Length: 286
Image 1 (tube, rainbow, N blue to C red):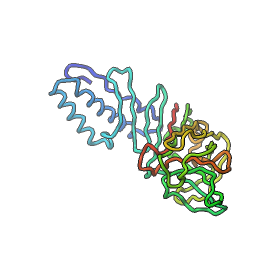
Image 2 (cartoon, rainbow, N blue to C red):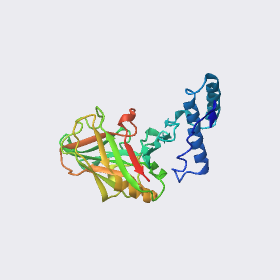
Image 3 (cartoon, helix red, strand yellow):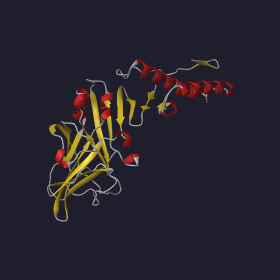
Image 4 (tube, rainbow, N blue to C red):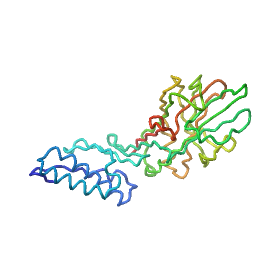
């Protein structure tokens, strides 16, 4: 594009990075990059030309949903260009020559819950609590067991048979808890396993849990602090399975390695008001 006698590179790439996107999606995405690029030029040219460019970009933005909300980082020298496209729950970006998908559902897209049993009694659906508790504890001397379920529905955004380079599950312990007042405690190492049957966060209880398999299971490390703790678990093998078999993505089961009191670990769920405590999955793939 030529503005004020100068030629500028307007990045229109990355549309092809998402091979599953339809033509309409590619056009919208490319136009968003164009709009952002125009706005990047306004500080490099004369005031008169700047007004023209800004007006053009603003008109285009009116026809592209969410254009003002996109987080874009563009360069005009064609050497270092990256872009992120977000839809509240999912964001695509680039990591070197690979694609990166970041998933962090909010309450609207939530699909997580913990289940609890006390002395053989199912405590019902706990989806009203914005937490994910995994523990083996006692309640008035009675044994209490909890484990958690998380599903990231938008893994389906990755084209089938893509190679997952790495996938990390990020879970965050808040500064206090409704369900687990003792916080993280004891040798609380957990398994992260692939769930093999469907479930609904609004109806799941301890007694109607779906099955899960140890194939490709990951280990969630023992916590190092009682509160404000960040857990990062490599779930590459599990996510690769979900990418290859999108119809079998029933999410993760998280349960203690040793089901013996007194051990507990808890994390914020997608219903947390503070986004910093919501579960997050980052997938790098090609």
